[in-house]
Length: 204
Image 1 (cartoon, helix red, strand yellow):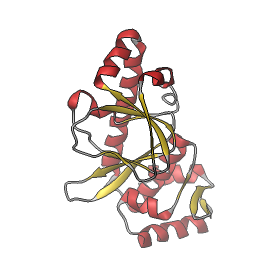
Image 2: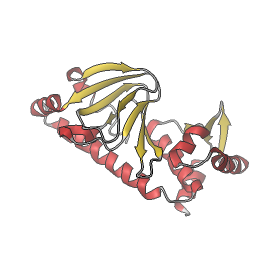
Image 3: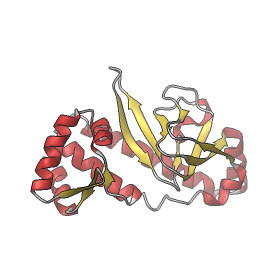
Image 4: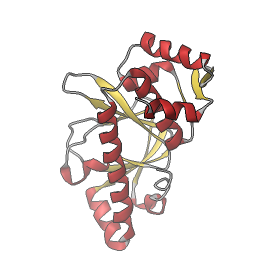
């Protein structure tokens, strides 16, 4: 994922720049797409609404990444995007995207690489949804560390990631603390032993 970060920066001058306060909905799942976005500053959470009506966080977008790529050419957005922090965002309409690709052929490859990465991520998340809670927690903490460089998350957010209660999440947290896999600082879960967290994912 780090290979994708900041690659779209040369084209920001063509985008529509705007700022979003915390908890601002950027797009909703099922809406007709108008284009895609680039996060310059802040943080965006991506959520998925299941057929049963359960909403789960499935990704956190760090600065330097595209998001909403599936909303081009009028296609429906497959997820919802909400600002987790005050954010600076660029919007690229279908028309603007076509113009960029015409002048800069490499832009299409950057967009496609990002889109493929997002589809793979979505497929991985769907495949792990029915896994044991401990494995899901390990997966999301590791994913966050690899994507944003911050191996931290609070219990409330983690429970929303995996669709489990805070009580269930807390039981695993206490177990991991006892085994010295993690620590808690300012209510944030910090990984201390990355290899142990990886082993949880691989051993189920």
